[in-house]
Length: 355
Image 1 (cartoon, rainbow, N blue to C red):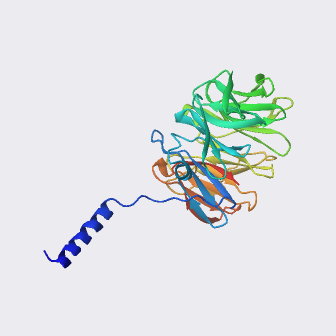
Image 2 (cartoon, rainbow, N blue to C red):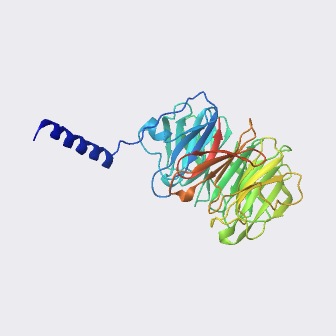
Image 3 (tube, helix red, strand yellow):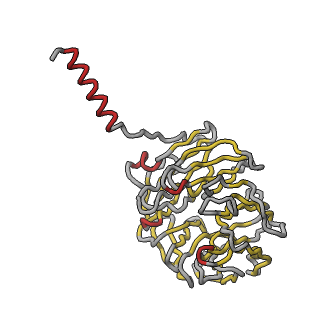
């Protein structure tokens, strides 16, 4: 075999090997000084592929696999949410029964809080203490933020504690269980239940605070035949001031308050991707009726999964989870609902945290 033919065949063989086994994607960390959005990607259940992304609002670009890039390992299975507490990110990883504490500048792992059963959300209640809600268990876990360890467990009446809100020395805890029509008011000094606030509907799951220091709670579970309600609560009297029942066909979630404290947003979700009851809706706290027409209609054969409001630009960000089998698409809209741009993030983008 002559030298020229040998080199030719060797080149073909090398090219074939590269084609069959391409180099893995390389990832970089974003500029820590840029303004943008930390995206929590829950991943697909059972596949251990939860991750963090960053949408750089200064360069209109996205960065993915931040945790793996910084730590060379997986976050775990189902990252349910993310919160910024004392300068670090706290991430409950639901199906891995742990909470990750991550450096907010370089995404390196600082600590793991283990032995937390099915953690969902974490809410700071004072400088040294946080509460954690739990799927499947009638529990609120109390975390010491100095040592990142479990202090105690508060027992409630029903499993599936969910979103929480800290206000004036109390933490209000929703209870996403069809047997429960309660919101628990817990004294954050004694960690004891002070009051059980009764709602007109069952399975409370979202809670926000308006400009008048009134609470708003979204409840319901369509697929377990519990119609949804939006209720306003006076946290001083512990009474429901007014409530709005949803139609049985609606499945609202992700109740979010605009920074102005006047306008609420929520997603109506249609898992079939049909046009009916599928999109982003706006509700004024002084309104007398629930909205009928969405501000932003979900695209055909899709639905929204996460929502965020940029307090600087007033732009709206919504994620399409693409069935939790591929990268999510995050859409950016003007406040009026005009489409602006889109970004690719990780699988199952469920929470936006602006920085």
